[in-house]
Length: 285
Image (cartoon, rainbow, N blue to C red; front, side, top):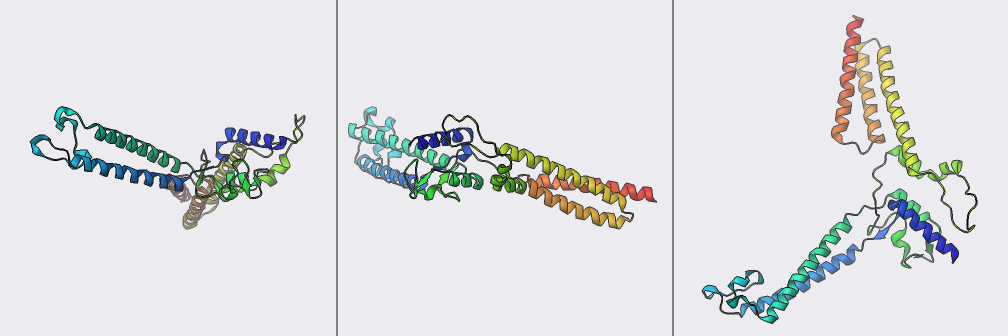
């Protein structure tokens, strides 16, 4: 029992430090049912009110009001509604307000981010969360907490989109962390689970360094190759090939870059390459 206490406390501490690790149910199926049920109750009450209003007499110019939205207090004799009608109208207003609040909540919940596959794998592999096909913290079926993430679940924070290099490191973090793992010393409780592995921020930093170095090498190699070629036609062909390599590299290493930004980068690269080729060709003559 002591191990369970430690396990859950460490789990919630991880949630507090990394909200993207947490996974919760949306209950959108039940919320949709609730909204439709509220809507049906609103319509029934509105029909009751309309039936009462239809029998009311004494409105201006002898006109009868057939719908609750046609009823204004200024048109009621003495500006006082029958007590029973007033109660029903007040109840209708409360029901509509509650319906709108629930609808806003449903929209907010539906916009919560889906848990990333990386965090989903971490969640599914965490020891002690599952017992006899049940999710221990809630006792419900583990189907909502397995990998890949269930469609009716969400997380508290979006990890964002990672490039292929970062995804490769993250997906293989267990093998990488084996080389850097350090055993904690002086644990207060020998049964308490320890946190091991490499932080995501470190993996992202390493990936950024590798990506920036790679792009720098591409530009350097482009200048060197174009400088070594003598014929202008060969330079143009090679510049086109290097431009395609640069384009693919950007798409692979920076997937969040917008299309307009990619076009601007490639246009700038070819503009510089054209100037370099033209200048080198002119000097060669």
